[in-house]
Length: 501
Figure 1: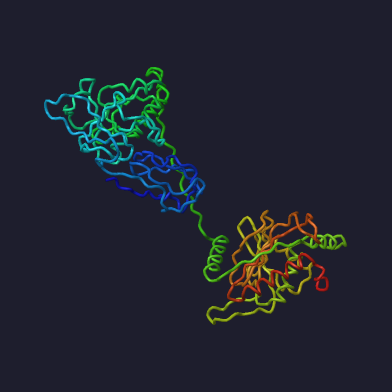
Figure 2: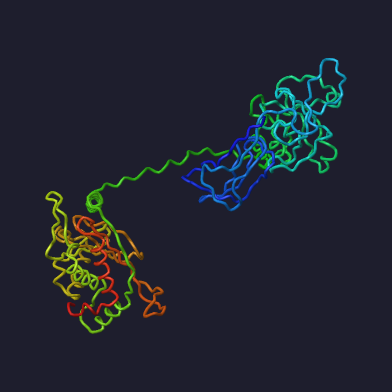
């Protein structure tokens, strides 16, 4: 009795958990062979043909084309198993001919396409006659992998390996008592001629092949199975053997021995040695400080886009009035000191030994500067007491010292809050690591023209992204959001700072 096995969508690797059915390659009722592709699915990585691990008849499919299935969901069911005599009308169970039998040809298949149904011959000695079409056997289109087989092929699908046998010539076909030595290879090689289905397949010597897939692959690529040596058990020709023969057939012919140039043997290039860079100096100090920050501080980040058109216009107006030029970072620093006066929680540090938050009275503003020696953070002392002109001058002085490599330890320590202008690198956003032991850092992206709704209408405005990374131990999201919103409001309307500039 046939056994119905369920084939589930297998694990497709690379952490993929689902796939979409693109195209079914078989229909219900089709005969499939082991490792025959039955469905084409698409994953997040690629298009994949899924092979069936069972040989038999497809009894059900799960999911229409376009359906997304998770890994492990049922894909289809296949009826497999040994022959069951007496199934269907006109079934017959041929018995082995006794010695001295009349030798009349015996039809050993009932003609049913279901797996093993209506056949009664023992699986280990099944005989199948294929030189000419027999009554009750017709060609079936079947599944793509089973195209070109006849109904007798379906009789052995899913059974134990009972090698297909055919005798040598008409005499062997009429001798039902003839016994062939093990293994009983399939001796049928179908003719590649267009009218092969009318004349019937040509009969040659024994060919060690049992899979219809292998025969079809050889036929489509013009490979003579009689010339192959199989790599399977007892010389069985497998699909890999035919595919290898196909590759060999398309490989260009090697030149004559005398025409071959003498190969020049050269030593393989040595693999480049790995490079080791000591973590010392500025690079080592930065690595140590950032590692400590990430290890000790539970940081969080929030960000907002702001219209900086009015800020840039205010800077242009200040510079047009004469005197020292005012830099953009100086205006942003002045906004930061005003925001820290409103939200002093962010101008603090955590004393882990005493389990206390220490709020600092003054703002010593650090700013990130990229130099040839690495990233450094010079500190502007008493930034809260400086105006925009004074801040511009101090930023310029410390930047020149950073480029010259003449910053002192006093120039690099004691900061309480850091302003990071990563917009100079041409990027919009970032989630910076807090400069330990500070409690927060404001990041500023590039200021670029972007579509923006201004006064109810779409316009092109100078837009900047602002991000705040803060120590969640010193405040909650409400405080951090309030600080960042105030900074954004000042960027969009800097007139509120005129009295303190």
